[in-house]
Structures are given as structure tokens and as C-alpha cells.
Amino acid sequence: MTDDQIIQLAYGEGFAAAAVTDTDKIVFDPAFRPYCAENLCGQYGVNHSCPPDCGTPEEMKARVLAHRKALVLQSIWEISDFSDQPAIKAAKRAHNEAEIRLIRQIRAQGCDGLIVGASGCALCSPCAKKLGEPCRFPDYQYSCMSAYCVFVKKLADQCGMEYDCGDGLLAFFGMYIFD
Image 1 (cartoon, one colour):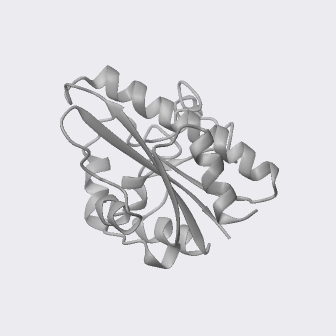
Image 2 (cartoon, rainbow, N blue to C red):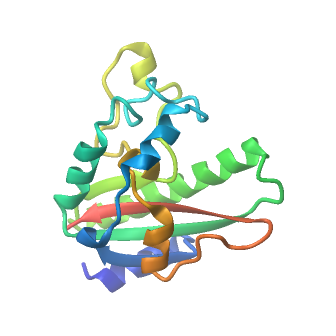
Image 3 (spheres, rainbow, N blue to C red):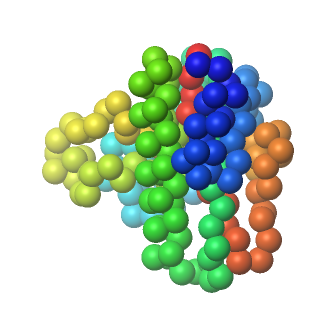
């Protein structure tokens, strides 16, 4: 499967933008990890895909760099009030659901890889970790960009994507890491 075919599949799933870049061009900054520890999403320590359980910043970076390419995905949402947490959560959920649908298609073509979502994994509610159980969907479990310490603004710029989309618009980003 070519990069162009993968990008076309992404547009078919409704993403506003999609680009393939080399993983060695991704900028990582461990200064983003403390945002996870602030636990504004409520998933720190209670979700298999979130810190501290997902791995250290160094381990997360190594997972990405173990592959050659990253499909960078952007969705843009009309959200007039950025304090509207239900609207933001719904948009993130829709972004991640589209990403999973896309990845099922890509994997069906034999292109295995690693998922990076727009938020912590929400495949199970509650996460099996809260029940003291192993992850139920390890092949589709995803951590967020902050857990990976990806400098998303620089990644968006590198891929020709807008990071700040203007008043009333909010962009979310995800990646599929592959070879």
C-alpha cells in the first residue's frame, strides 16, 4: 500500500488533512508529559494507555522511532466555547473512532503499526485497568500525543497543517506509526 493510497483512505474517513512523514523528523519534548500528570482528563493511573502505565517518555519515543513512517491525521471541529468539555470529548471520540476505522482498513492491506490517538484510549468504559484486568483490545489500544511527548504544533507545521484553525474551530491530531 502506497503512502498516497493511505492518505486517500484517510480523506475517505473524513479527516480534514492527512500526511505521511518520517518518524525521525517528529519532535519529542518530555516537557509535555506533566500535562498528563495534571490529570485533567481523569485517566492518569487508571487507563492502560495513559501515564504512568503506558511507559516513560523515553520508552514512548523509542516505540515511535522503531518504525519508519507516521501517518499524521487532523480533524477540525466547530466548537464555539473551548470550555464546553462535553463537546470537546465528543469531538475527540469521533476523531478516534474515525482513526480506528481507518486503521482497520490499513491493517487489512497488511500494513501493521502503532496507533496514537487524540486522547487516551476509550475503547472500553471503564478501562479494564480500573477492574484490575489486562487490556481487552491490545491491538487497538492507543495513547495520546501528550503521552508520547509529541510536539504537535511542530508536527502540524511540518505536515502543512494548521494547528490554530481560527475562532470557533478546534483541531485534533492522531498518528499511525508504520513501516
